[in-house]
Image (cartoon, rainbow, N blue to C red; front, side):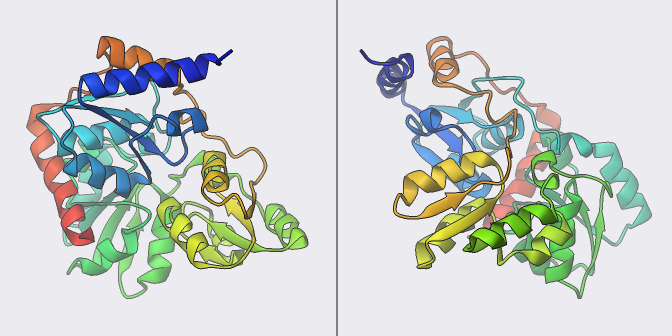
Length: 305
């Protein structure tokens, strides 16, 4: 007898074909969501897929800022999020008011906002970045001073890679609670097992400095593909470890503690099916700010091409 998830998967595949829909899922989503996704990737890969798709309906399986990004890039399309209250605590650290206040203090600075931010914050930024292209984006700007938010750890990573520029983190304590929890004891435990330690740039400085490689989730896949190393310790959300195990079944992947983003785990195939059947959960954005937010995203995509 087929499981409920298997039944949902069959119905989802049928309906999305009927209404010309595509499902975009972040790497951190659970395996059953990946099973129905047309595109699986990191924030940049999903943004590019959203911009280039010919689908009439986009179902974004992730958190709200990802669905907002898809809508900004496809204003004429119907963009849905299966779980409307799936948010991002990191994104909540940053507000448009904080950006404006920082810009008044540093009028000569460019404002770079992490894609993990609201559409309202993107609308008052000069350009958007992801963890995978943050260094490239900052290097591409003519400004010597950069206002960067909301992730202070990622800002610190960029500061290390681009020492010739002044990076001002706003707020100073912005962080992802999943990546912030990693400790030196986790590093020591991994070293005892052996293998390569691969960490996300949202990790604290002390973790980044003791790792072997620092990379975004999209780059993690490419790095593992290019290396013969068989044992890997992945310092990011646990969903990425499940994704890597499915992609590289001949390799050994270790997660760290229970690194779980509660909001990323909210979406199930049941939610996706209800979303497809009802077409509810549509992302509606303020028209006044959408144009400037889309411009900051287009700036990023052009710089990443």
